Image (cartoon, rainbow, N blue to C red; front, side, top):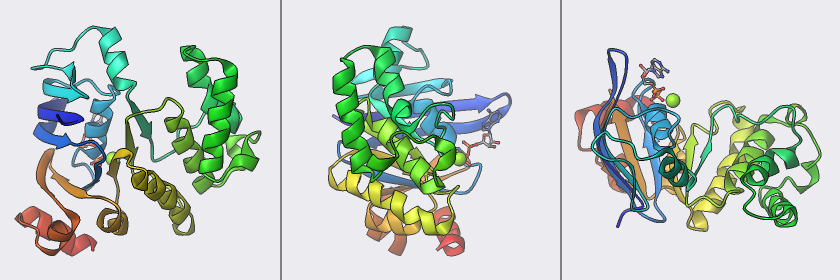
Length: 247
Ligand code: ADP
Ligand code: MG
């Protein structure tokens, strides 16, 4: 069974059809790089999976449970349980500016009250260590570089032990010299077999870290392939055009 199964997902903003019957699957341990021109619906697709956008039609199953079936959502409690299996990292970090790094990590698990403060603190320490920011626990986001902010955002996304991590252009807001430190953390996660969907312009990451590349254009999934065949032998005209301009 696929970890994510999207069938005929549709989404419009008013008269604008942004996602047109898109279908794809994500297997456990997949690292899928999603590429495509600006405005093709990549962000809307990711946001739909975590219910930051409302889907208009189709079926989405996450870990075997329906997020939506034939355009009908289940009860809010089920939606919450399902979206809780995923963590998301945004282009602009979306850290809470009035909270320290540590509190950014701890606020959601504390609200959920599923474990005691000591366990939450221990995991926050472990995750800050993992992203190389153990010494920044008491600092506010304003005093971090963009690369450090994004590493905090990744650690925060991991606090609720997600089965799947979604990244929406995690390095696009960073100065070039800071992208490497973020990509390295993502590479470590991939090596630990975290299941990830990564919308990115980093073709190097798509080639070297992802096991599948998905090309979206005009609200459609045009092509999915293993990196080598995808980049060396793209099947569709639109993929070929995009790669010619972006490689
Ligand atoms: P991408 O991430 O591939 O650049 P998006 O998913 O952000 O594409 O956007 C796809 C299309 O949907 C674009 O035409 C964009 O202008 C439009 N769009 C995105 N969000 C909204 C919104 N909240 N309201 C209206 N239109 C939107
Ligand atoms: Mg986008």
